[in-house]
Image (cartoon, rainbow, N blue to C red; front, side, top):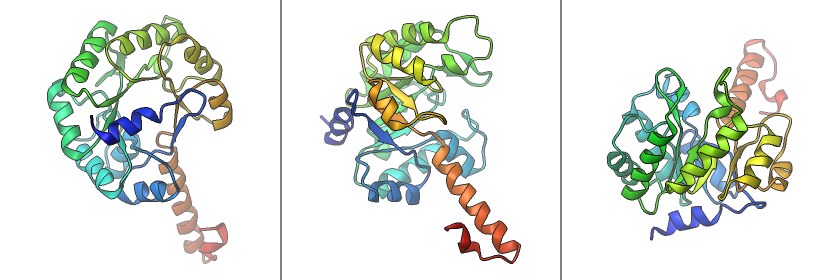
Length: 249
């Protein structure tokens, strides 16, 4: 058993969640580790933007893995990598690449790229089962993207529950109903027989999500955007002849 993977898995505690201010490079990973967080998670949207590509597998897989590898090398705590939908790689190769960079966990979403449609649930469950078989220690965070579909024609909560159950049966460690509002997160945490990962969206907070029974809380690309906003404020003040440090930089 990989000790870092075991540590990451043990940090998923319903009601006492693992909190992950997602990172995008070695420097941001070091900041988060230094702040005392016991694990690190990357955000694909932040990494792809940092590399100059659009999100949703718009960046070459090689560049995404290379960036994630630099994150892993920068810290001594477990790292889980946002691997998007797997970049079209066979499960065995995907696990090999994650293992090669030292990642002990990954996000895998059930959105099909390009196009943005939801993957067939049976096919996605088979894919997750194959990833589990190839990586017995890997901490798999299975995204259920039902709240991202415009005019879906189904109830996103019911569909997330159905998909989440299938993904847990297939070997996932955690279910991630990305963009689910807090009320829906609470329902999912009660109905799913495994840990639930929630976004900390505007209008909610960590304490409320913890009280709903989630085991993991993510912030996605928000920390990256906050960092860019601080840089923009600094540069704007400097350009205007103002004290760039007046904004608290």
